[in-house]
Length: 280
Image 1 (cartoon, rainbow, N blue to C red):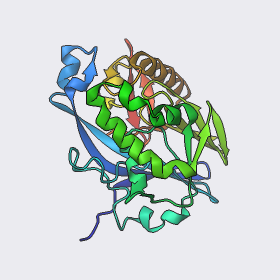
Image 2 (image 1 turned 30 degrees about the horizontal axis):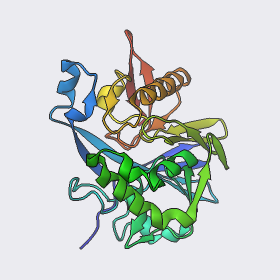
Image 3 (image 1 turned 90 degrees about the vertical axis):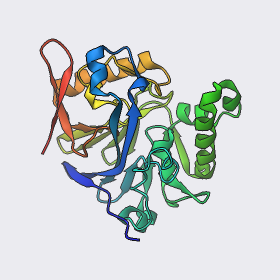
Image 4 (image 1 turned 45 degrees about the vertical axis):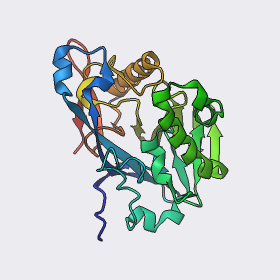
């Protein structure tokens, strides 16, 4: 059966090309959001459509994947996912050429695409993670310390982590990977969540991962909490700090769960909050 090419778009950052690859979409129940008004609730009722974006950064000498989608691991609940690493895609056909993979965090919709049949699909890549993220999810005692309804999530993440372990390179805080690629610690969604800065010549752009999850809610109200944030207050503060800087500097950015593969900029709105303006 022919595998469709994932929806994609390219964005130039100086001499660097950043290609956004869509892994599909997820429909997230409105109940996953809290501290929102009735008006805001209507924007995501009965569910919010999340995009599922990954990125391929090409510097000229390196091919750097940022997140890997969910592979086959979430298709039972979210059938339109896993497209980035479907068999036959250009990425998988050239998987040995991927030199680095930056993982914003270890939720299954970001790392599931790395693993198939107990092996990493990208054998030559270094996997860049925050040490705090890796330590948290691979803790042998974690499974017994979480609520029962969280145990399947932990079991899945730990099963995916095992085949990755020999390729993992751990970082603490902000790190420079060279060639204009930097990691920035941005906690709250998970203990070791990180974002990516791409810079070349006088241009720059950011990949926010899950520092933002709902464009429908969190641009206008960065305080909105999400059920899968490990520390909702920290996540909100991270988001507000990022938004303030992105809007002030008019820096282009993309995020995993935006329902577009386009980069955009933030405009501050009179009365508070922001609007997202895609760059066409």
